[in-house]
Length: 524
Image (cartoon, rainbow, N blue to C red; front, top):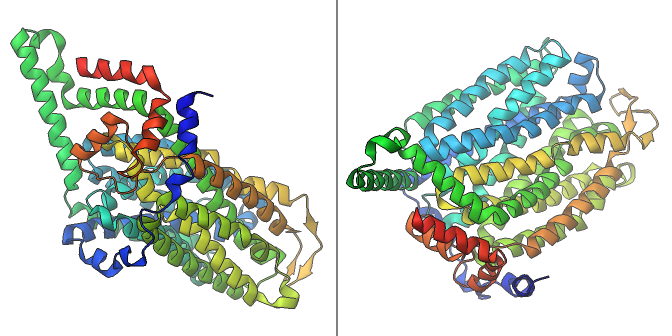
């Protein structure tokens, strides 16, 4: 192990300490909200609603899993491939729409994403075979994958840095709010008409139409407009240099234009920041295992293991998602003061401590209220950690490729974790339970001890996230305007003013290779 690496590791624990321990230094959240102008609020609102409906559409499968299995004549484990395929194909969408968002602007990728939601959610509702269902969900994954990076950039990149933690937490809770809405509308629409589970998907196709209309009324973000102007200026400078040297007709630079500059910048970013990008993907794999491992099969656990009625299951999931929204908002706000990494670590410890009551409470003797309380605090912890992530990823990402890096790292993490529900379901089948009759007289024949599987699985996930977060970098308070971002990237400082030494050592581990790259870029 090299000396720079050892020096970097020695900074990991000291860098967790907050900048200040005085409670008086915590900003008033209402003043932070008041610091946003109308355009900030407009961008944040449209991104929040789009992210909310992204989650709504995703959870429609989890909440109708038994109905889908019955309709298509398949086992629950086979239907979970509809979840797995969505997670796997989201990476394709993240790469494609991330490049579009960074090159051509946030608006049109956002509009196309939501247009695909409309078409594919309707198509899912009309599926007649299992193969059609899987094909629709795979295509749906591409559309869903393109949204996250675009929504995060749209919502956060123009905000005042001091408000970023709070608004990051609020944005991420669109996911929990979407789950809550999906739970409520599932109860209202599934099995209340002759069409069974299908009306939930048909309804899911409607709100994106309004989201598209709202986005079309808004311009590009100020940050993107600055980046676009700088690319055009750089392209013009290259043209002037070539005209001066008599090379205009030979090089074809006019045909390549700004797109050529964009791709050259992309190559430079990948050469310089590959280690950081790898870390972000690994971190997102852990976070996606955390959310999907604790949520995707939980409705099935309530239904088949705990034998909850549909009303009881709905209430527990609503309570859990209220906890998730409070956790994400609160911890996201506090991370601006306590730090991103420390906030994540505290939530992982809390979530790990609550795993047993979350998955193994004796419902018969202790009542379903205990489960509801445990679900509230478990999802408070899971989404509390997630509330830090939008700001954390944005702060770590290179300025010129923020949409691509944030979206792709998130969705590559999703790809790694895509089989989490299938893994849990498959392992759960090895722990069968005897048939039981629910309080309303329904006989539940196919029962498994999913609680044990979720508890062990999530324990491993929390341990992984703790280790990776402890060892990883942080960039609390980094500004998103290009001049500040470029200065940080050129010096290798991605930690903010109190953490420069740590990340300089982190970048120093790449040593001579980066120095050669830097000289090459200066030559270009």
